[in-house]
Image 1 (cartoon, rainbow, N blue to C red):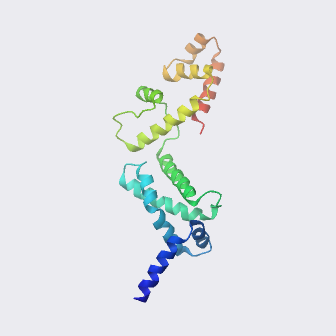
Image 2 (spheres, helix red, strand yellow; image 1 turned 90 degrees about the vertical axis):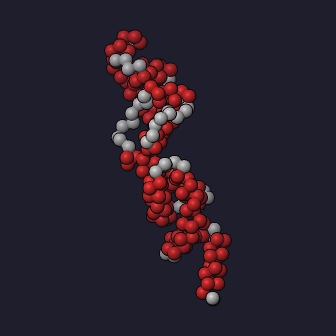
Length: 196
């Protein structure tokens, strides 16, 4: 009976301890305190991850990977922001890294349907693969952010070559630029579009 009351008292005390204090204790070697952080954040992180991934097995693996990353990275927590913000930032990076491991080296340009979605900001209907859907949405967001950084000239050249599939020679002739100038503008436009 006394052991049960002691466990309940310890549980109540752990609920009252600030995250930052728990982090410091864990760093000092009291690794059993990590259980408190785990219980405190598990449901929230699970909900956060499950909204971004459809496959239940991937969700479970990702949540566990998040907590492994949290434990490994605790010493890098500086307390400049609330611990919850730090944990969810780490969660976002973990999700992104899982997709990057599966993602090809290059970022393909959108199809005609995706192009329409780029202008409308809507999802493309009928895409069943959640990974492909997530990657497409991330590429579209990246392209939208990048498009704002392009000059009118860069956007026009990019549109002609990548969206209308016109050749470099044809674009050079139409815009009265050299082939090298067109290539240079396209290279810079792609860098701006794909910049984080």
